[in-house]
Length: 83
Image (cartoon, rainbow, N blue to C red; front, top):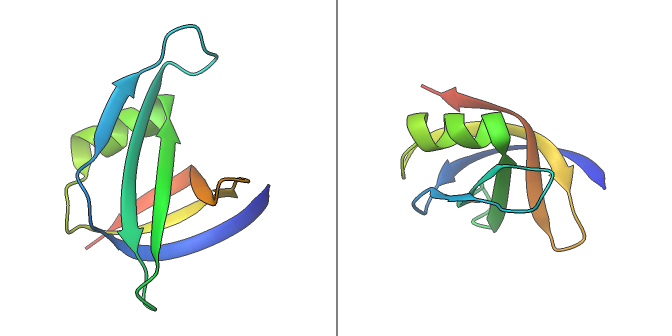
């Protein structure tokens, strides 16, 4: 996996689910649009997923540090809401 840093605007609702029989308990998924109009799928697990579901809404700008997986999705390591 590759380390990446992104700034973008959330363009979808936060999809929050619980995972059974997995090392991770919760997952939050959403999409962001970056400056060049590319749309990127974002995933967060456990504590970060809880924070995303509680604090973020469609239209928020975020700064993300994460890892790019082989499905071209970014798995969040650190996230900060801008503004």
